[in-house]
Image (cartoon, rainbow over all chains, first blue to last red; front, top):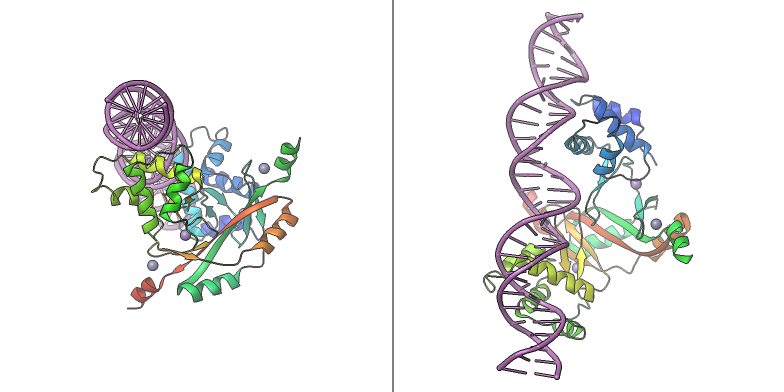
Amino acid sequence: MASASLQEAVSVLKSTNVRMTPQRHAILEFLHSSMSHPTADDIYKSLEERFPNMSVATVYNNLRVFKDAGIVKELTYGDSSSRFDCVTSDHYHVICNDCGKIVDFHYPGLDEVETLAEHVTGFEIEDHRLEIYGTCTECTKMSKQ
Amino acid sequence: MASASLQEAVSVLKSTNVRMTPQRHAILEFLHSSMSHPTADDIYKSLEERFPNMSVATVYNNLRVFKDAGIVKELTYGDSSSRFDCVTSDHYHVICNDCGKIVDFHYPGLDEVETLAEHVTGFEIEDHRLEIYGTCTECTKMSKQ
DNA sequence: TTCTTTATTTGTAATTCTTATAATCTATTC
DNA sequence: GAATAGATTATAAGAATTACAAATAAAGAA
Ligand SMILES: [Mn+2]
Ligand SMILES: [Mn+2]
Ligand SMILES: [Zn+2]
Ligand SMILES: [Zn+2]
């Protein structure tokens, strides 16, 4: 998993000109406690009791700050809104077509594909992204009832 | 490439309740003549001399009709707008991080990854998507000058 | 502690892509 | 050449995200 812990994330931020605010810390905290790859709106909603006056712009601003600092990755799927992942080490995602659940998936890498792509297209390949789609166990059960 | 030819696409549409209009035909034509995986707006702009009164809604409507008929695939990357591909057979895309160029790339398939994902996550896997990112030859040349 | 500096938050407006709607038009059928 | 039902058009509405400027507050220095 190698998700930088919350502490680590905080110190990465402190090492630059980034100040620590209660809102910022709460967003970081939520990201690290959540396994669900939340959207900006998920984060906003989850914090609205604790921070009734927080602006949705603050969530977006902070997500960008975190991305720039390299402690969060943005997952841009086709559907409407981006999702955010504080596990920044390489891994893939398995996504349920029914309920949208996103599960981490580790696989050794697809160097061979990159190498072939490089030869065939002449590109200098830097990286790739892979998502695997299907139906999760819960949704499969549901549909069989 | 196995892109259904324009003729084939037209007859697929005729086999359902879809009427052939000049605008619709022009959009199909453009998709089949273009190798660039255009956006809705690319299509709209490319046809505005020929159809000065065409609405952008017509482009979107038709792209949906084509998708539903299975003769066009939508490519949803993170960046703003969708791209459309009339090559509906399985293939991957290599994308330039500098200029955004998209090149088709054929690779035997990643059944092994799907099988492992199935075992590890319990999902019933249906398919996957893979994109490979790098710098195209033109952009590499540019940067070395 | 208090002050100063400057990053951050907030509220709101603006943007962009896409879809909904209703009136008008037109491809197909009879 | 009607009649029917699908298609187009113009425009408004939606959703996600960003821009902006004023108000606020974190961090370090005095
Ligand atoms: Mn993840
Ligand atoms: Mn393609
Ligand atoms: Zn599910
Ligand atoms: Zn390029």
